[in-house]
Every structure is written in C-alpha cells, then in structure tokens.
Length: 53
Image: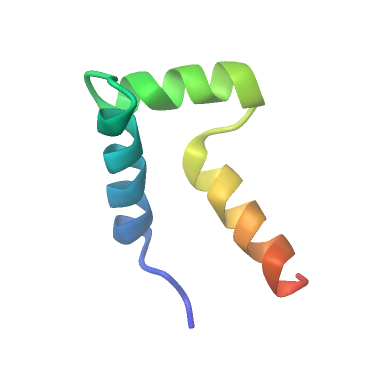
C-alpha cells in the first residue's frame, strides 16, 4: 500500500511545528543542510529500505 504524499507532508509539518520551526519550509531547509536531502525524499528512501526495496 502506498502512502499519500500529502500525508507525508502533513507529518513533516507536524514535526517542524513540534520542533519550534515557524514553517515546514524552514525545517526542510535545515534538514537538507544537515542531512543532504529534503525530508520527503529521506522518508521515501527510508520507507523503501524498510520494505527491502
């Protein structure tokens, strides 16, 4: 079963707000600076590795 990209975006927004960022864009900018990729791509790759793909 595939997840809806909007659901992932909502999760990123919730994390951003919980960590005190003013927006998901601000969080994504720092996330990319630290980890080298945007949260949505990181989550997609992480989900793929959990499925074995």
